[in-house]
Amino acid sequence: MLMIDRVYIIHSQKDENLAKELFHVLWAVNLESFSPLLKKAPSISMAERIHYGIRHADCAIAIITGEGSVSPCANQEIGLAVASGQLIIPLLEKGEELPVLISHLQPVTFTKNTYEDALGMVVQNIRNLTRLDWLKIRCPYCGEEMTQYITPQEEIDKALMAGNDLETMCSYCERSIALDPRTFRPMS
Image (tube, rainbow, N blue to C red):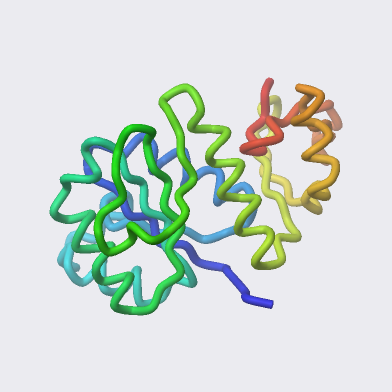
């Protein structure tokens, strides 16, 4: 089975908020993620952060929006990921086209209103390729970070079909927490 532990996030500067949402969802399912635009290191050039991030990632997720499809930096990152033989999962805004180097890939499509659904599909795709055993949650009541086994995919699917949240309990303050089944984000 392919092991995915580190994910490189490709995005344009204008899509930073979408990248941050993806970063938090990946954090919740215990995947390390990297974006040279989100992780600043003043003494290391942007080019070196890009090379390092792609070289050390197990896969890349490319966020392609109207801005992302014309971003020279995002397109260069895609080119480097392709040249490195990286597994690439495209997140494509509806109405946009994939860059030529990844036009053969099957994207996860989204609109501004369905981005969280798309993030849930990305997690499910990664989960189908690798083992995701742990879920990290920050309690919205006491602020403590806890780790617990991730909900089985069958239960997530049932919650999505029924329009329900997932339920868990904080191991510190012992309060019930409802989680969004797509992103595992507390619903407080």
